[in-house]
Image (cartoon, rainbow, N blue to C red; front, side, top):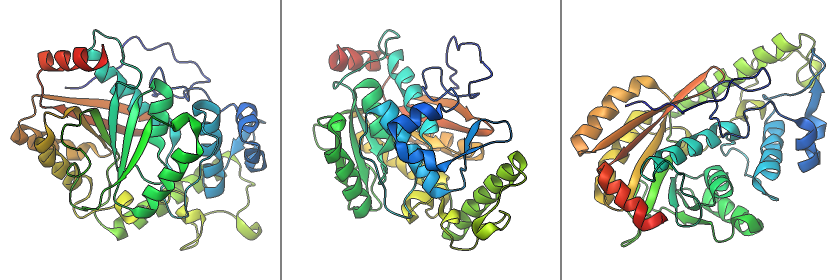
Length: 345
């Protein structure tokens, strides 16, 4: 079943197509506002041929600083940093996922989005960046548990929580020591979550992940040269393919578990579906981001085999990028309504 947002406002030329109506990043970046929140961003801004300020999205330092500015400006985050080679996610797309999950929760709550600490979410693979818990807690007041198998990611995410008063009492970070387990050890006996979310590893191997990162960098470089033919690369040279192992090539970053696993996205989410049965009565909704539409048939088959009673496929888009949320529940609609009344009223 596919879901589309109701009563979207008319698109304006200044707005980014495809993002959720409640996404605060639908408008073009207001760089004056962002520089006020994060002054370091100013050094990365350059005039585009149109005369407007622009950012080089192939520059990893620029992207990280933009994220820091967005988190400060929109989500009350005063400190945010990630180690080298860890995933630096795009904030607008991450926010979209959470706003669509809010719509899903509203379905069992008379159309009203539940807000506040009574709602608790589990972020599977939260990474060092902790973006989903940050955006969700500051947008709706929800509580989050961020889980990850990487000790460095867990330590960095915990530092972000401790350094930001806005996250106190709303975000908890847990280390998952069992690499093959997703819910075991993270969902405690007697504990309940209103939903889980996940940005799964997309690629099936390290080589495939490297090729994907290189392709993204080449596309960014090509787009930049199309916007500004006079742009220069490092050491005054024209920008093209990033040098092997360069910082620019690592713009999108990502550790092994963030980028790839044997079998790729389909295998990881299939395992998640199978394991979700063990905590079927402790979560109202399970969900995962799905990058490739080609993976849906095998995942829908896995959901039928697991006995999911409700499946939602929520399309998302940001510019030319198309993705979707796959969400499932083992509770019937009446049971989800009882869940909502008991937990959110």
